[in-house]
Every structure is written in C-alpha cells, then in structure tokens.
Length: 582
Ligand SMILES: Nc1ncnc2c1ncn2[C@@H]1O[C@H](COP(=O)(O)OP(=O)(O)OP(=O)(O)O)[C@@H](O)[C@H]1O
Ligand SMILES: [Mg+2]
Image (cartoon, rainbow, N blue to C red; front, side, top):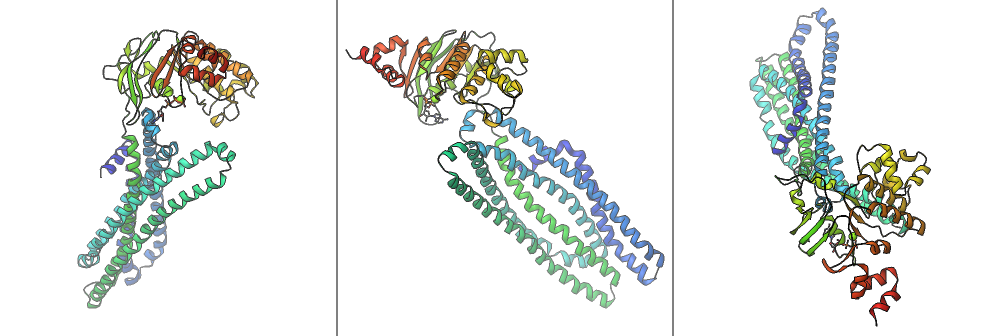
C-alpha cells in the first residue's frame, strides 16, 4: 500500500488534470446510470401510451447523449494520461538525478544496461498502470456506482440476489493479482537483462565481430527473449483468466435474477419495463466491475515495476558532504596519504599507504597489473572513501571538504577516453562548463588537438557521435587532455592509456601531456618511459603496498622490482643489467 501512496504523491501536482478527468469520467459513469434508468419510463411511454413525439425525438436524444459522452470521454482520457505522463516525467527525472548522486560502488555492482532499464522500462511499466487505474477507478467506478444505484432503486431484493455473487469474485481476483505482481517483477528483471545485453553488444560490437561471436550473441539474446516471453506468457494467462472467471461467477447472478425477476413479472409484483431496466443496468454494471478487476491486475503489475523504481530512488549516496564540510579555496595542491588502507569488499587492496606529493610535483605510479594504482588515485577525488587512514589536500582531510570544492581542484584524464555524443567544443567544455570558444581553442591548441579539429567537417562544432567512432585513439586522448587543460585544476590525475600509438601521435600526446602537467601536482599511472623519467618521485605498488619509491636513478640502483619492470617494459635490459649484475 505504501507504494500506491508514493505513486499518488507524484501525481499530486497534477491534481487539476486528475480532477477534470475524474469529473468527466464521473459524467460518463452517471450517464450510463441515467441511460439504464431511462429505459423504464421510455419503454412505458412509447409502448404503453404509443407517444409518437417521444419516439421521434428518441434517436436525437440518443445521439446528443452520446455526443456529450464522447466529449467527456475525451477530456477524461486526455487529462488523465497527460497527468500520468507528467508524474512519470518527475519520477524519471528523480531516478536519474539520484543515480547521478550515487557513488561508483553503485555502478560497479550494476550492469549499465540494467540501470538504464530501470529508467526506461520500469518507469514505463509503472506508468501504464497508473493512468489506466486512475481512469478505471473514476470512470468505471462511478458508472458502477450509478448503475448499482439504479439497480437497487428498481428492486432491492433482486439486487441482493444479483450481488450475492460479487464478493465471490474478489478472492480469485486477489490471488491472480498477486501472481501478476510477481510475474511483472520477474519480467522486468528479464527486461533489464535484455537492456544490458543490448548495451554490451552494441558497445562491444568490435570485439564481437573480431572474435566472430555474432551467432553466440544472437543465441544469448534469444535465450533472454525466450525467458522474457515465458514470464509475459504467464502474466497474459493470468490476465486472460481473470475476466472469464469474473464473468462465469457473475453469470450465476444473472441467471438467478432472470429466474427470480421473471417470476416476479409473472406474478405481477413487477412490471416488464421495470424488469428490463433492471436487466439493462445489471448487464451494464458487470462491464465496469470486470474492468475494475482488470485494473486491479494492471495495478499489481505496475506495483511490481514501481518497487524496482523506488529501489533506485531510495538509495542514498554513500559519499556525501560532512555536516560541517568546508569549501576548499585557493588550493596549493599538496596531496598526502596517511596510513591509508582500502578495500572494495573483504580483501584489502591498499595497505598502509603513506606518501606526500608537494605542490607541482609529479608522482609516477608503476607496478604490476592489479597492484592497486588505479584504486589509489581514485581515492583522491573520493570516488571511494578510505577505510583506514586519511587522504589530505593542503593538509585538510578530504572528507572535511565539500565534494564540489574538492572535485573543482582535480582534473582527471582517464585510461578510457570518454567522449560524449556532442560537439567537440562541448566535449572539451566538460572541463569548464560555459567556457567561451577562445578558451576552448586555447586548451585544444595546448593539447595539440587544434589542427586535426580544424580538419574535421565542422571544426569545433563537429558532433562526435556515440563513443567517438570517427576519431583515432590518439585524437580522442588529446581531446580529453584539452578538457583537463581547460579545467586548469591544481591537481591532475592521469591514468595513461597503454594503447600503442604511432611515434608521431605518441609524440604529440606526450607534448600535450607535458603541457598539461606543467605547474600542477600530478599523479600519473605511467606507462610511457618519458613520463617516468620526468617524475619527481616514482612509487612502485605491488599487492597494495608501496614496495619502492624514489627517483628513476635511485630505483635503478636498488635493483628491485622497479629495475626489473623497467627492463621488461621498456626493453632497456642492457642498461639495467649492467647496473644490477656486477
Ligand atoms: N570496483 C572494484 N571492485 C572490486 N575490486 C576491484 C575493483 N576495482 C579493482 N578491484 C581490484 O583491486 C585490485 C587493484 O586494482 P587496480 O585497478 O587498482 O589495479 P591497477 O594497479 O590499476 O592495475 P592495472 O595496471 O592493470 O590497471 C585488483 O585486484 C582488482 O581486482
Ligand atoms: Mg589501472
């Protein structure tokens, strides 16, 4: 019930639409009642007194009645559906807004496609229910009430006979509703699987092609659509069962009424016209009752979807500003790790890390894959919070700073060169929203990207297209570097891409990076020899610990892991061997 309460909360701002719609549907319902009621006087008037004027007017009356009814139905439909869509719009916005505030942990533990599915499919499924149910509730509910009024007014005894059966329909309806709710949740989960499969296969299409996995992808997709169909089939079955069951049960009522009412007419305790009016109302009333039963099923289905939607809306971000958080202003850019330990799950990934980067120093992180380099730098912008120890910027624990001011001090160039489906200029502007074009061009020039950008069909206004398919790896990197340059933050985090670039673009990317690192405190996960050589300090991370640190020359002399890695990675075996093996 809580869920329905919340759904209503979202509809509250659109109460005027709902009110108009309810009024219109009330009129439709009342008209149904009036129609059934009028059968009796009309029949009496026309057939008993053979009143020809009324008979002649009747067709016009019917058309007029239906015209009004049609207008009301339009108002009813239009306003309730728009109200539903508006409520859905707020829910979508809210779920997206909340998703944006959630930390990386949330995104690590959910497939992208599944997260998308919550916003697209689940919210949609929820909407189907809300609009439908509100409409049914008002229109069918009111017409049921008005028809019931006619029925009881005509003959309460007969009415009682007729409606003894109604409570009997409630039990199966409830049973079926529960099943449908469960099936709906399950089919929404399958829908999420479908979305993530789609998302993965479209974004990984290259790998699929390269490994000839088209058929197995198709097979996987089919398995999921089959599963989805199975859940949908079962909910269709329960939906389809529900109407016949209601009808069957109510047929007992109708049969009883015909029998009892018929004998009343025979005995003369009831007129034939009254009896017909009664029967008309009764036949009319079963339809809204049936629809209300159906609406109950739809409501259950949308409740299943709503649960999944509210699950995301209710998640609280794990990383937020402390109550007394202060904004960091005029940052010097010193970064210090004090006894930092960190784990994603049970196992510690970083143990007791202590290090200090002074203003404008370049700290290079090297070490074997899985050593914890990416994890270490992701603690600086608080993608995750440390488990023990503290990370300090300008001697402030970063947890005592506001997130906004913290993130403002940090520029990030990730290993994955993420570009958005926008113009080049706007992609660079992610570094500084609203920056004038001159600044964008300046940044791009310093990133050695200006020349190739100018060669694109529309220069800076060229749309990158999804995932930047039209740009080379080196070009994408340089756009990301331009973005970081435009941000001009005192602290830079650089997860160098390992992708092999040709010598020329390697040189250009390197030049761009040199420009970027100048006058900034830089943490660089280094794969390029030149970066390592220029670092003020090199930290060798292995198994979550700093096993060696020092300058390039110092580290080579110790003949430890660094010198081994160095000779392996950069092939300068002779140089190291000559030092390390006397
Ligand atoms: N989001 C995550 N959830 C759980 N474990 C993770 C997560 N990210 C990384 N790990 C684990 O943490 C360890 C360190 O990973 P990390 O990405 O920091 O290594 P790395 O030194 O950057 O390696 P590489 O050089 O290959 O990029 C690995 O064992 C990895 O499995
Ligand atoms: Mg890494």
